[in-house]
Length: 153
Image (cartoon, rainbow, N blue to C red):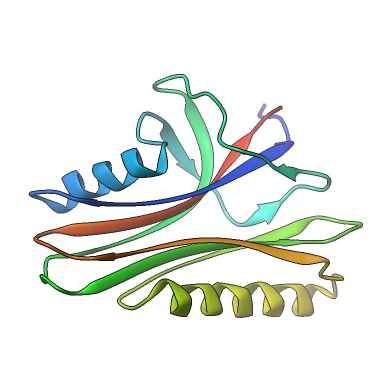
């Protein structure tokens, strides 16, 4: 049985490659999380979980994560990814992610609005929103990634 995560790290990165997968790998490297094996989870921050700096990574570790990515092969095209965590003072939180053909500012605005809506429909008091984003101008084949990495401790 998995433990309830007690911490998360928010990261974002961008990269170029000869293929979409290589660009994704470079974006993960840029974000500092390329050597993890992600288990994609939905978007709930456990009660009392804290946002912490990225922890030391053991290569190959199975790691729960909420993440998004976008790729493009159009030179000059701007791509962006953002992830937002809504924090409730007394209860659990909500994580939302967005990847788009546009700017980091646009992606951030979208995830903030998504968090606000998620809190409203749950009738949760929203204390704060933490956001991380990244944008990239494509050279040949580019990728941007944003992720919330869950830690058991």
